[in-house]
Amino acid sequence: MSKVLVTGGAGFIGSHIVDLFIKNSYQVVVVDNLKTGKKENLNPNAKFFENDICDAVALENIFKEERPDFVSHQAAHASVRESVEDPQFDAQNNIFGSLNILENCVKFGVKKIVFASTGGALYGEADQIPTPENYPAHPLSPYGVAKLTIENYLFYYGIIKNLNYVVLRYANVYGERQDPFGEAGVVAIFSQKIISGSQPVINGDGNQTRDYVYVGDVAQANLLALESNKTKIAYNIGTGMETSVNELFKIMIEISEKKVKEVHGAAKEGEQRRSALDFTKIKNELGWKPKVALKEGLQKTCQWFLNKK
Ligand code: NAD
Image (cartoon, rainbow, N blue to C red; front, side, top):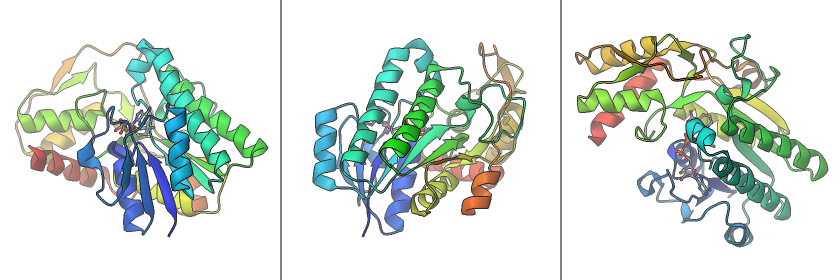
């Protein structure tokens, strides 16, 4: 039985990845500091270490004790806004913490690491939509810079230390367990507000677009990337489709069957107007494609928020 260490395995995306690995007979070890992750997200069949990836000594001990075959690196402080407010904190967590992971992967002979990067925050305001992987990466936030930095470190570790890796650049991931209270995705925020009877507010004119990909499809991409013989490569994980916030709001109202007014607030300064990722590369090379259509995924998500109420 192969063993995989999942960082951030108590978080939104990481916990779905953990569930899928366990379903596929992997032994799973989770490292999470529970900063935004939750114990209730943790699969009871995973071995849990409540540790920070920035704690080099603790992390090395975990690698020494567990000797994972694979690493799925999902832990990050995933807030673009906070990275703008405090770039040092973002770098400390997302760059130096990740470096600890990469060093241990080399030291303990990990067969492959899959790294959760970003598509939306990497390409900036692209003039090619859906955007392919070879579009120039010029991130416009410290969070995006940190993700690109780790991609560059992986390139170095790949060449010089022969570390096998796959980078997955996620679009806007949504689904069950997304936290509606941090700097969460709009789907979680709207779901929570609609269900609790409070008024959702659309920022600006609502014509800004994003590529919404269901968390179950993202977990599937992680499993495929880990098991494939592809290495030292980056793939976009999205649907290739743009959906405006106005459209998203309308679908969610329709699903909830509630009467909710469409209210617009001030536009967020510097907010990206359009984003969608071209997933042709992973479709051709690994046979991955998003299986859950937006309406179906939104139904599942709203149902989850309803059950949780
Ligand atoms: P999340 O906040 O739910 O998950 C992150 C997890 O990492 C949390 O459980 C948190 O407690 C843990 N963590 C953070 N810093 C840590 C540290 N220093 N040590 C140990 N654990 C730590 O966020 P998410 O949306 O599930 O994001 C997962 C990954 O996907 C992140 O790397 C994020 O940057 C990336 N990503 C997410 C999206 C999205 O739409 N949600 C898009 C692109 C990329």
